[in-house]
Image (cartoon, rainbow, N blue to C red; front, side, top):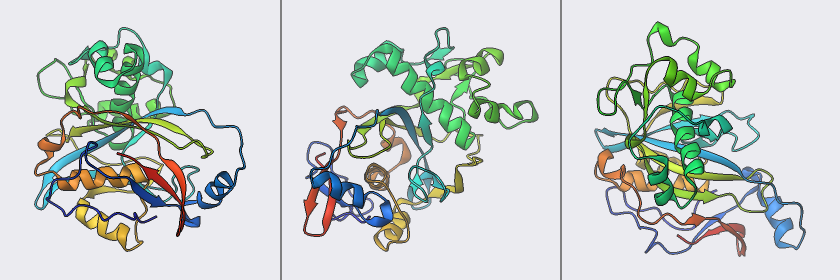
Length: 295
């Protein structure tokens, strides 16, 4: 669903939430949402789905042409966002809020102040982000101390751990305690907070985080939910998107643009000072229904 607004020129400063105009993202039958949007705009109403809390992580590194971001292309049979390019992420597990989880870096209370939520909610979102990027990508932001090197979770002693996290046989807290590791909340930053529109049958209350790819670890994308997993040059993916060769949800498109506009990966991985809740509004346009986003 190509955007009606041209993306920024790679390497230029991307608009910030304070100066970006409203954008319209057309909904087509390919997205599976066009018909639902038309019914909603026509006055039909149904019970709103309860949003599921979720976290997603933009894992970035410096490449020859500037910052790159690790992305998954979801398998075509997925109920949500089939065949779309996404960042690693997923739903919050209630056990992400377990007390006593080994923790280093900004506290849940400090995260809560930044995110505008309770400390318990902040912990769950942050832990879910770190757990999901490990489950789906194999990158673990944890180490034996608050400032030392990170663990390498790819030797034989880690065999099966990711799968047991995915099936919820283990919680991240249990993994950290057993291996005497601490979660490194100082290695991720909060970038945005998005809520799925009310008309959609599956809704997510999602925090977007970012992290620099750790040295001596490998992003492998070994997850059953993805048909491909790779480091992406934002300019190339945006060209594929414009040509109709790649599919991106609106928030993913916005943040691929932002990664491409950064000079270096480290420049991108900084907390956004302005973190409003962004929920697209469904509007009618000459080209059909669209998501309007004021950011």
